[in-house]
Length: 248
Ligand code: NDP
Ligand code: 8X3
Image (cartoon, protein in one colour):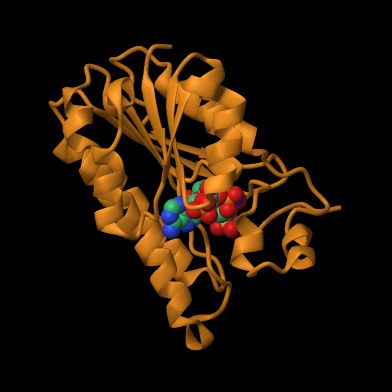
């Protein structure tokens, strides 16, 4: 596939798996994240097919500068995968941390907006412009102590619809993929490095793998130009909702 795909959060989990899969399909990849050494590993693995950008999506000047620095064919972005994001904490509102709330709203919502706005001029020039937002089942449901994370993902859902409306007629496709439980570094970040607590989240059932979601990103972007995968919810078979997971 002859497309340049810009992936935020490509240093681990869903973003990394997507970078690897799409590179394998022949795409040029712009891989982004804050952990430079992880991006260097990806570069070593994929060679000239990947360009790496180190920036924090919260920092709007860094976002602009990083995107303005893209060389040659990497600057003509066809597909944006807005994937960077995390949950920070799992606490009822009455004891929640303001820093955690700021992190989730700044990264998951404002960061997505900064990157999208900065890339829209090139996406509009592309004949195959496409935005794929990684939402969550937390964009569709609210679960106990999920409050601000769920709100941030509900915002991603709303922004996906808003972008699709505003960009209607430009030819840019806009859609979202909303995963349930995927085993990545997500819970390690949510529980602030508490590895035993994080691994318990995925015990007793078969969670989704990052590669499963990467496959769905490929599914969305490999449709013919008149087909837009607007909204796709995917869960492990053992999961029925955010709070109902069959564990053995
Ligand atoms: P990971 O923690 O494995 O990956 C998160 C990615 O986001 C990392 O590459 C990280 O890179 C990047 N990121 C986080 N904060 C920033 C920041 N401030 N600036 C730039 N990049 C940032 O988790 P997942 O792969 O699971 O998460 C990817 C997306 O999928 C998120 O939006 C998450 O909400 C969503 N999701 C995850 C689910 C799950 O169960 N795992 C289910 C549903 C949705 P770095 O730290 O190097 O900056
Ligand atoms: C991540 C899945 O269930 O922790 O978005 O919200 S969940």
